[in-house]
Image (cartoon, rainbow, N blue to C red; front, side, top):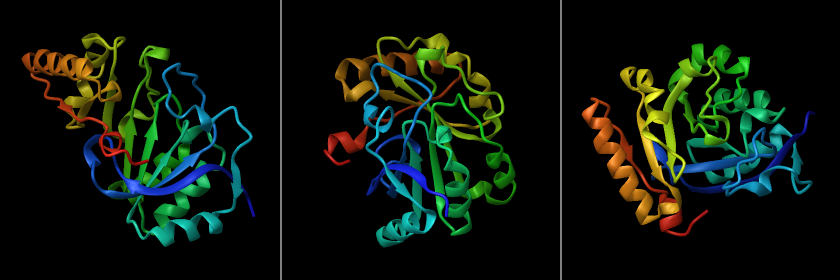
Length: 214
């Protein structure tokens, strides 16, 4: 049976974005195609500290947690060769699957399974300044949420590149970097300027860091 490179599996609440507060089982997959200097999960790539788990071993852990939602994260989950099998199996098992991605990659399994399971697929895309906020064109139709980390690098022009996503009723989230007060202030300023352009965005901090949970 195929083995998947897993960094960790844990039970927590969703601490970011529009689904904040829900109980979620997190599966952190090994590997990433980017090397962002500010990344807070660098332990998920360029490492030998991963577990090789087959799909039945993963399901056993997930079922123990009893959460209805599962988040595939990284690193970059779409970079992991085990993604297709894991994604397909979780949906077939009836789980609501959240995918946290930097948006640069695409896998055909997404378009194949979306036709049947679209209500149970929630793709959160967080484009990075490292590659000029690029999002793969093939991924765009399947994004359910667009999230920007508000730091010293983010400019309003970076957000306006995706104004058409907002017109399609896809929520845009501003997440102050590390819950810093100065980044909340910048988020608020961006929110006001965007509203002047008839673009309404939400400011949502990282709640798991506020309550010091994983």
